[in-house]
Structure formats: structure tokens, C-alpha cells
Image (cartoon, rainbow, N blue to C red; front, side):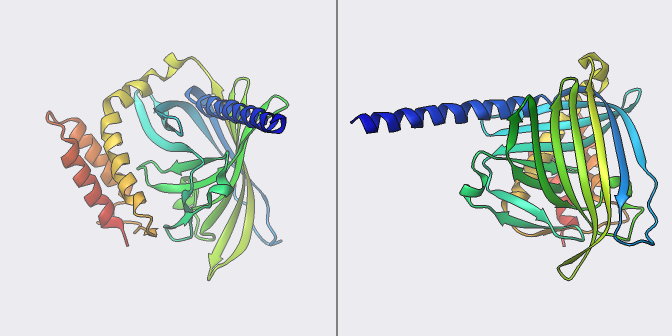
Length: 303
């Protein structure tokens, strides 16, 4: 009887710790929301080819508003909005965080993603970060545990992805970026640190072209500085909610997803953004009809 009581108490203690750990995870993820002065810094650091010519460092920045879109028990969704000028807003990337998620898409190459089902045992206590492009299409995703130790709070994972937008139209010498992403919460905001491999993937083999360091800082400022982005989101969030619902249906198929680069000389995000501008200025907004149009655009690009 005494042994049973000890086992029961141990289970209760473990469950309480697990719950506390999950709350810490949720707090760390949501700490990335708000208004930030951001800097994006990338530098190539190494190549196995002694004749490789390193590309110039990349640096940019601005104000970014990170909007909490969904806050559920096992899902947190955040939309990034970049302020590039007075009342000029760019819908930037989106990150979703799913607890103990088993369904992910992995990038192959040539705008193609394969579905992968993970065993429950492999993701116990972990969070999947799903990163989406400006049109809410796939970019990359991976699962790992948040770590809270010695006053540090961070999450780190490695995932394959297409080329970043800063190089997508400029580089043809590699076709896959293998990202090591580290998100760390700091006293004044958070840091997105990256250690990336630029590889040429052919016939299932990867050839390393160069390695790159990324150091993106998010320094917290008053939310009022991002009012323009907040106002933009208030006007546009219904449309983008409909876009996300359509994409969710596409992802639920768990099929391999491959896309064309252009249709009628336009990339996909141009058509999805154009539709948003059109319907947000109309008097009769119809979610059902809009979702049909969004799906039709996406289907044009499927291959």
C-alpha cells in the first residue's frame, strides 16, 4: 500500500512539473509578441571550396509588430508585420507553435514539400514551429523542446527550407538551405540566431556550398510605435483568416505539395495579395466566396 502511495505521489509530482514546464514554454513563445526594433544580419563564414567567392554581408531592419493571432491550449499563432515606411506595411512571415504535434512537412527541393508523420514518442513535451511565407504558404517546420535553464529560455531546431527571399531571385548556385534556428528570449526582447548550410541537392545527395551566420535581434519598444501595423491588421485580418483556412485544408491532405514559380508571369503571393486588396475594399465581404477564390489561385500553382 505504501509503495502504491509513493508511486501515485511521484506521478502527481511529475504531472505538476510537466504542466509547469508547458506554461513556461507558452510564456516564452508569447513573449515574442509585441512591437520591436528589428535588425536582420547575415554573413557567409565558411566554404569547403577554397575558390568560393563569399557574397557580401546582408543587413536590414525596421519596426516589426508581432500579432498574437491564436492562443489555444496546444497552439499559438503569431503574424509578423513589417513597417517599412509611414503607413506602409508588409505582411511578413508567420510562425505557428503546436504542442506535441506529429504532422509536419519537410522541404525537399524545387518548391516541393513532403509530408512526414512523426511517432508520438518522438515529440513528447516538444513544440513544432511552423514557419509560413508571406502568402501563408509553406516554408519550413521542425519539432524540439523549449529549454529553461540558468535563466535562459530558448528553442533550437534544424530544418530544410527553400532559399530565403533575400537570395531567392539572385542565387542559382544552391537550391536548399539547411537552417539551424535558435529562438532565445532576452531581457529586452528576443534573438533569432541562425547557423545555415547552403547546399546543392541533386539525386538525394547534398553538396555543401557555404555556411552562413544569421543574427536577427528584436528589441522591445512601446506598442504605440507599431500602431500603423495594428490598424492594418484590424482591417485585413478577416481576409488572412480566410486564407489560412484554405491553406489548412490543403495541408490536411498530407499529400506532397509542389508549386510552380509563376503563372501568367506572376508569383503566387502577388495574386493572393491582389485579391485581398480587392475584397477588403468591397462593401459585401463573403468569406465562403473568397475562400473559393483563394483555393482557385493556389490550385493554379500546384504541379
